[in-house]
Amino acid sequence: MRVHYEPFEGRLRPYYVCNEAVVRHAGKHCQWVRGAPVDDAVSALLLEAMAPAAIDVALAVQQEITQRVEQAAARRGTQLQRARYEAELARRRYLKVDPDNRLVADALEADWNARLRDLDALQREHERQNEADRSLLDEPAQKRIRALAADFPRIWNDERTGAVDRKRMLGLLIEDVTLLVDEQVNIHIRWRGGRTQSLSVTRPRPMSVIRKTPAQVVALMNELLETASDQQIAARLNELGHRNGRGEPFTLKKVMLVRRTYGLKNRYERLRESGMLTGEEVAQQLGVCASTVHQLGRKGILKRHRYATNHRYLYEPPGNVRLEKGAGSRYGGRPPRLIVAQQLQQGAS
Image (cartoon, rainbow, N blue to C red; front, side, top):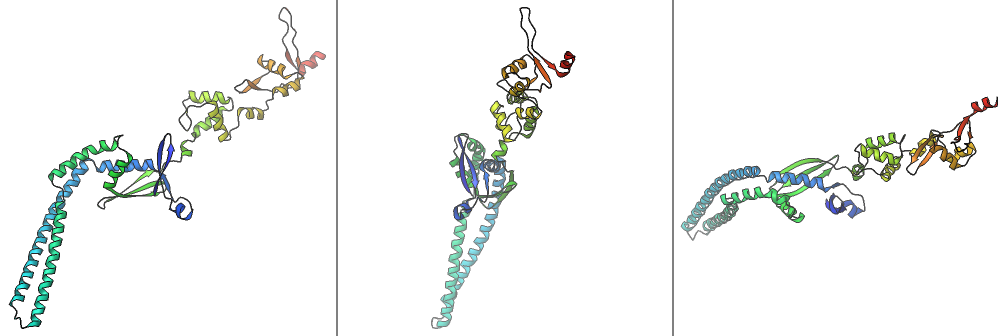
C-alpha cells in the first residue's frame, strides 16, 4: 500500500491506498483507509513498547540470553579444543608413517588436511559468533537505553519532531505493517527481531457520513416546517443547541440546503396542500385588488400565515362572503368587513 496525501483544512491528510490494480491494469483501488487512525494506533503501541517498564523486561530477557550465549560459547570452545586435538593426532600419525609406504602416507596426509580444514572452519565460526556475542548489551549500554526510553515519548510527541524523523525511528523498531481493511482496520505489525503483534481499530466513517446532518435534527426540522418558516426553524434549532454536520450553527441557507437535500416540503408547499390561497386568488374571489387583500390581512380581517421571511403570506379561504367596504368620517367611520352569505340572505329578507 502506498501513501496518498490530500489537502484538508490547510493541512495534508494521509491515506493508505492499494493502487496496484490502478497502475498496472487501469482498474480500481483494491482497498484504502484514512491514515490518521492507523498512525495513532501504531504510535500508541510504539510508545507502550518503548516504556521504561517494557525496556526493563526486554533487558532482563537480554540478560538471560547473554547467559545462554556464554554457555554456548563454552560448548563451542570445547568443540574447538577437540578439533585441535584431532588435527594434532592426525599430524602425528602422518609423521610416523614410513615414507616408502606411499599409499598409507597419502591416506594419512588426506586425513590430516581434512582435520585442518574442519579446524579452520570451526575456528572462523567461533570467532564470528564471539564477535556477535560482544555486540550484546553491557551495563553502560543498558543505562543509555533506559535513559532513551524515558525521553522517547517526549521526543516522539514534540511538535518539532518532523514526520521524516518519526518514520526513521519507526524504521529502526518496526520491520513492516500489514493492513486488512474490512468493517474494521486490522493492523498486523512485524517488529525488528521477528516478533509480531496485531490490533484492530474502527474504520473511519466516510466524510459524507461525518458531515451528514443528524437524523434527529432532520426529523425535528420536518416537524417544525408544519408551523414555521426556514428562518424561524434556524433560530429554533440554534436555541435548542443543535448543530449541522460541521458543528456550525444553523442559518437560513443551511436550513434550506438540508431541506432540499432530504426532499422536505417547504412551508409554502405545506400551506398550499392544506388549501391556503395566494393574495391574488383571494382578491379574484372577493372582486378586489391584491393590495386590498394584503391590507385586510394586516388588519386581521383575513386570516393569513407567513411562509417566508420577507413578509410573504398565504391566506385561509374566506368562503362564501362578500366584502363590505368601510366608510370614513370625522368620528372614526366604519371599517371594512366580510359578510357571509347567511347574513346577506337575512338582510335581503
